[in-house]
Length: 139
Image: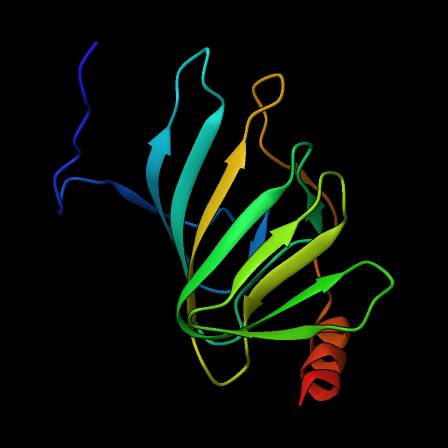
C-alpha cells in the first residue's frame, strides 16, 4: 500500500447537522480511516454563536484551534476561552461542548478515533441560556 494524498480543494465539506450543532458550522472531513486504523479528522469552522451539542468521545478528542476565538466547557466545570494556537485534549467519555464566541468565528482541527465505528456520542443541545452564561463567565 502506498501513500494517500488528498489535494487541496478536493476535500468535500458539509454543513453541520442541526441535530448535533447550533448555528452555522462547516465540516471538512479530512480523513476517515479504514480498519485497522481508527483515526478520523476534520476541519470544523464555527460562525459566531455556533456550537456543538453536549457530547463525548469514547476514545477522547484532540482539538487544534487554527483560527479565531472559541469556548469549550466540560460538564460541571466553568467554560474556557480557546484561541488560535491552543491545543486541547478532552479525555475519553468526558461530556463537553465547544464552539465560537458570540462575536468571533473559530476553526479547529478535530482528531479522534472510532470505537465500534463511532467517534462521538451526541447528547442534548447547549441551551441559549447555558451559552450566554458561558459567554459571561469566560470574559
